[in-house]
Structure formats: C-alpha cells, structure tokens
Length: 177
Image (tube, rainbow, N blue to C red; front, side, top):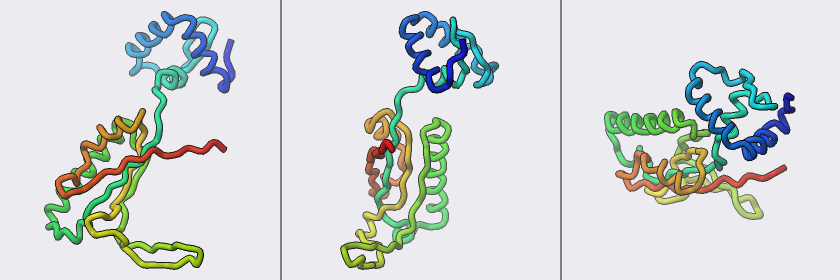
C-alpha cells in the first residue's frame, strides 16, 4: 500500500513505533547503502513504500532556527592592514564553510556600519551608526540547531573574540499562519 505524502511520515512513525526492529534494519540498510541508493528510490518496508528522503526526515532531530548577532568594532576603525584584513576574512570564510558543510547554515550577511533610524510617532529619521564604534552590529548568521546550547558550541569559532567581539544568540520566533 502506498501512503499519500501527507500521511506517509505519520504512518511510518507509527509503524516503526510498533516494530522497532524494522527501524534498526532500515538504519543498518541505510548506512550500508547510503552511497548507492538515490534519495527518491522507493523502499518496501512491510506494507509501506517509502523513499530514502522519508527515512532521512524520520531520523532528523527537531531543529530550531537561531540568529547569531555579531557585535564588535568596525574593522575600518581598527586600522587593520590589508594582510590582517585578508587573514581575518579567511577565518570568516572557513567558519562559514564549516557550517555549510554541516548543513546548519541558513543564511547571513555582514552589515555596513552606516545606517538610518526611523523612530517615534513622528517618524524621526536619524543617520547612524548609533552605538559606540566597538559595539556595532557587524552582521549575523541564521543557523539550525536543537537548542541555544548547541549554538553556543557553534559560536566558539567566531573569529572576532580576540578583538573584543561578542556573539548574541537569539531563537527565531516562528508564527503559524
């Protein structure tokens, strides 16, 4: 019996809950054949036909999105030499690549230090930066993780701690629509 995609994952979870040895068999089969099996090739499990994508999604832990906000000095104001700047950017690119390879990086950007602020009922516009130059928000990454403690571990590779930088970690609020 082929399950419709909307019910397939719930039905498969229920089936595996009732038949834990089948999941163990699938785990072993998946590990042994991961390189050979394409993700959308159907597998027969008792009365269910599933794909490797279904099985991979079944084994994934529940992940949340977190934003790492980078607070620190403006590189231009620090007077870094071109070599120092290139070395620093190499560290950023290495960290970025490490997160991409781990499949946890959702996105992010560096921010330019100049800004505009619109505030109050009269929509007053003020040119910035607005914080001390050593406390500028220089950028952010959005990552997938189980919890904030996992993001603290990810943030250990932040390249600017030696410049007095800070990483603020905030969970992204998700609204059901």
